[in-house]
Structures are given as C-alpha cells and as structure tokens.
Amino acid sequence: MIGAVLRSIDMVDSMRYVLTLELRTVLPAGNAESLAESGQMVTVYPDYVTGPDGGISLDSERNKRLREIRSIKPGESVIGKITLRQDGKWYLFDSGLE
Image 1 (spheres, rainbow, N blue to C red):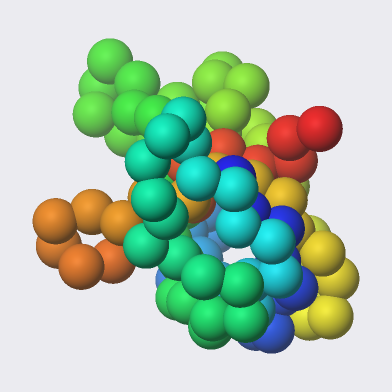
Image 2 (cartoon, rainbow, N blue to C red):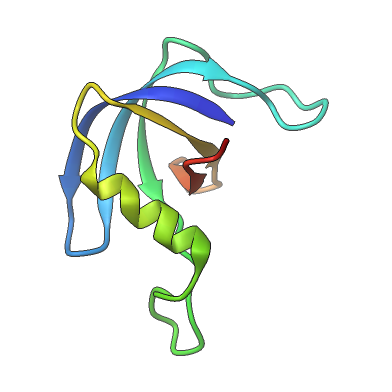
C-alpha cells in the first residue's frame, strides 16, 4: 500500500493513463520487504480487471476506483496498492483505499 503525490498524468486513451507518483508512504504487504521506497518517483500504469470479452470491465468496482484517478490533478494525493511486475513496470491495482 502506498500514499503518494501525483506529479503528472498522461492519458493514453479514454481509459488508460500513465501516472508519475512521488511515494510518500510505503507499507509492505505482510512480512515481505517492499521494493518501493518513500521519496521514490515511480511511473505507474492502471491494472484493470478484464471482462468476458477481454476488454476492460466497466462493472468492476476496482475498475471504477482506478478510473476515478483520471480526475485528480498534479499535487493531489493518491492512496492505493502498487505492484512491480516481471515486465519491470509498476501497476496500480487498487486505489482510494481507506
């Protein structure tokens, strides 16, 4: 789980975006160590759930939260969960968590 400040958002299309986040708080899951560190700048991509047709599911509550990120502005806070995948990219797989 991370708390971060949005530095930039670049829209790829009507659903997909690329975030640049400055991490402020990093809480690793369970007993694992985190690869992310407070103060680090990371580029993050949304990890949408796909529907039966292979496209982005518009009914998924998680996807609704990920889509809400599109409306925040640089300088605003982001709370969520990120993961580093084998492709070397960070993915936001949930946001707006309390």
